[in-house]
Image (cartoon, rainbow, N blue to C red; front, side):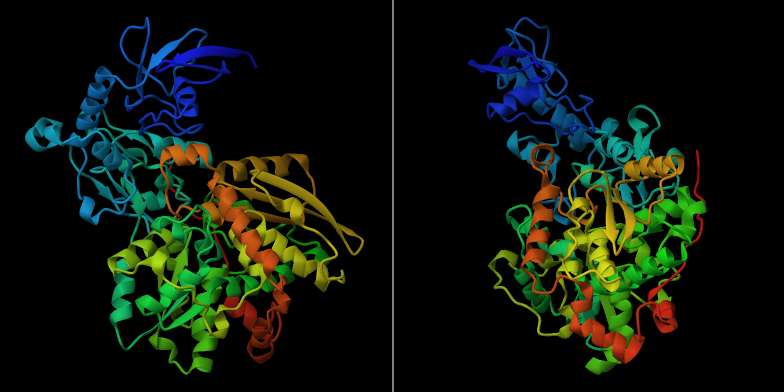
Length: 583
């Protein structure tokens, strides 16, 4: 790659010729404001906040898409630049509904942060009705709410949906001052073909797209003295929750998380990692049975509701390949109510199960009509990691000042296999640890680390007791589409495929903490969170699900064995084709 020499704010620098001015400036430590820009996702120059002054050029230029050239001289902080940024922020603010004191993004709103930085008042929005547009709120989805009153039309959500899922659910509708973002003709999100991965929410710089909150319902349950409220947190929550309170990205705050459950008044704690161990045994046994019979191979994992939404809508002819095992969230709620309630002395009808999840699709999953047994819902309420952080702030819990705590209750115990469910490839690795040992391999004899890593599609072959097992790990809607096409054309016999609806897996789920565009562009957030989970796994004495003593006792006393008739009635379900609106 050829290098060029340019001057930024009087400083000479030599950089690759494929750099943009924004990247060159930030490499030198100059902070360029932006709202619409997400590297590799949305590079449209629509917000015009990243303007710079290029010597010899007419007018200010957008730095995010402006290519450098040899001898270029650039200024990034002049009075003209500041005036331009202020004016554009005023125009953006004129069509934004300011409800900051109740807004989900109050503490990390990119628009609000820039208005504070440049001391911008909402002069147009307050004084001129010409700038006002009709506010439309689309809350037809069980997971997502679209609010045109907050939208600044930056396009980041539209591009994120296209790049990450390849489904193009969102687009600009209408013209001029009537333009809004949503499905075609502002149709219902619920039948738009959306898989609820939440990438649009993570891309949004404000709160124009957000999860449908259940904080009030959970707080009401906690105040109801007639209810026993059980909480279960997914593996990946513990390496992301602290970020909402200023911890390092990916820091393991498991101890503080447990203490916070006590502080807000949850009666019992079930770690969903325990339920992940249960899922491993059910799904792993299902895999062994299919390998032995040769029927309905490959087995597709079913723990990601975003992926389940995808296959039901876009590949229904392959539903026979989908595992019938419920997800750890659903198994966790079910066993808490139908088994541990009796051991703990509670009435099943008094239990309220609350899960804390990295994924907004879990809200949709919990509400599915089949997710119940004998009229009792598996899971009552789902909070995302972000929602739980907001609930703690509402309840005035100083999270970072909490001392570590670890629950004494047995239903919070888990193995290393359960904890790595939170990373892409973790479900695969956890299941193969169990499957290989059930089939006769010595414990730890095989290393399944080939399925780790951030690649969108990973493949590996393992020889287990003389049989080659072909596996694959796929995450993100666009990669799912690509892999299924590849699988149908290359005729390779796969035995086991892990699918995750969210790009990066659960640690990067649509309900996890949101960072600014600059941090998203420069920090590998998924890698930092993943490494923390792998660190927890590596330090565990027990790293295979069958070594979870409480789990094995539960089988002995109640379920019998994995895939028993009772287990199938309780812990398994069926899925069916779902139609959606096509424009």
